Length: 306
Ligand code: FPP
Ligand code: MG
Image (cartoon, rainbow, N blue to C red; front, side, top):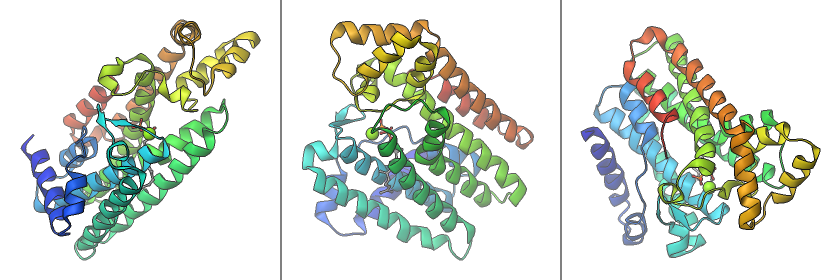
């Protein structure tokens, strides 16, 4: 998609405006991801100077949040390459995140006159995603068996920015408030389904594709949906065994047991089922908007391998 290259060039242009060789040296090591948020926005609003600018802003916020997240998670890899914190240390990763984030906010003010709702929509989403990250860290302190808490956390941490991007793009596309809200629901559902599938892939995907070792979430203290479902499906002895495995570097035999239980109990299938449910909610919300491409994006996102 030519437009995605245009967005990457716009991000580069914004960074060059800062006239800082340090920023350019560090940012050259950022790996570009799937650009899900940009693909979404460009399938709602046509490609234009404004939509490319909105996408560049959102991608910079996304990169900033991942820079900070990798420091918080002590992650040494991101998208199969060494993370910025691994290459240049935590301080540089945090500061590069701050630069990307504040430059993005500066550029967001250019929408104030033409689309006054957009800066507020994006700013609110960033506050929510930061709260979502706090909730994630808090939930990771202990084994979590509460599905509602997990769903609220992923709605904040992951879905908020995707939802805001879809909502903002709908205003760029000239939709009225009621129709824009349909895209907002679609974006939220896509975001929640996306995170559930990400959490499933941490268990089932090839670790080479993931760019991190499999089952790393549970080791890091994240009781993601499949573990949470498994817990409720196990008998008392199984529940104790699973709790013991939480936040541990497991021996091969114990790791095999956890993996086998996740598959045989139906916990993985049930988790994918919930992602499909959110997918259906999102697709239904935009049913009258003639957006076949958005339906395709939802299905491809749920049925992906990594
Ligand atoms: C990835 O989660 C992290 C997020 C989706 C959000 C992170 C948000 C912040 C750190 C708040 C700060 C925000 C700004 C703009 C500076 P994950 O660890 O589950 O996913 P991963 O496996 O990709 O790391
Ligand atoms: Mg992380």
